[in-house]
Image (cartoon, rainbow, N blue to C red; front, side, top):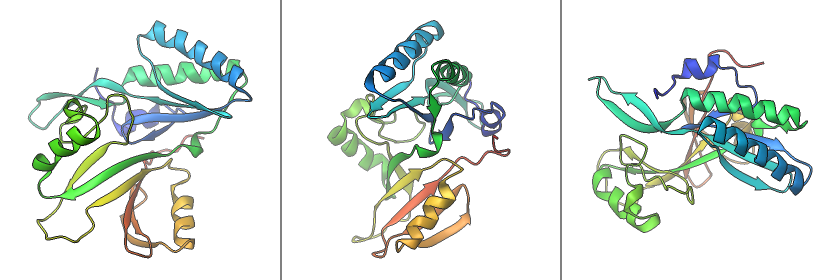
Length: 234
């Protein structure tokens, strides 16, 4: 199934969900464990009917959900098809159904509270380094999974994605790892402002609001990314 463009995801108007990184994320608030189990049971039935299921994490007072397809089709400039992890129409359809189930069970969505974290290693030698980190962190089956690059993506989501950002060759010491913080479009500016108030500085906001680089007082950098809809859902 074809991966959806940013414009298509925006047009879907999924007000309960936010596009972070590769997938659709949300949080629904629950009063107790039993209510969460009832909600997940209904989601399970909907997923079985659709032949597709979300990733689930449940804790005290919340159920976090992530939707993405591991068989999305990306076509490069030459027209060659690649199978990647991304949002497809089946994710949009199931997201709508899950929101309907939540409404039926009187559950409120809190998508502004979700955050996705990715680790990024700046290197001129991604092809050489990636196998080492794949073997160390997850096993080699995670190397390049769901991407056309060298990302390390654990099949069971035990760890954040480890990506590689191309840079010029350089001697150490120099910061190599940084954190990518994927935030909902409607909280990113507030979160950056809070970090600055706490002592951070903005290093580069030339691509804001989609991408902003900040640094802590020691100079350690983080990239704040957000999918900014062309038209924000009401």
